[in-house]
Amino acid sequence: MSTYLIGDVHGCYDELKSILAQVQFDSEEDTLWLTGDLVARGPDSLEVLRLVRSLGDCVRLVLGNHDLHLLMVFSASAVII
Image 1 (cartoon, rainbow, N blue to C red):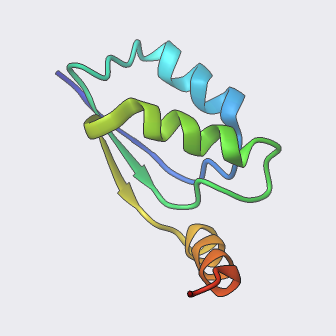
Image 2: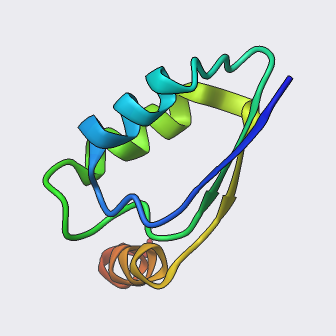
């Protein structure tokens, strides 16, 4: 059982997958802390979010300024009925 910390992914899905493969990350045994800025800059922000969601309860997440900006833009565009 290991704990890994990764920060500033910035939408770099392939690189995140590569890092997790290198450490043989096991979502059943290990814990993954993602320390902000999952989205922005890189080419695959949506794929990063999908991967993080698929990992389930083993992920602990601290939102970064880019993540908060995405949430702000999304909430501002949401229509309240």
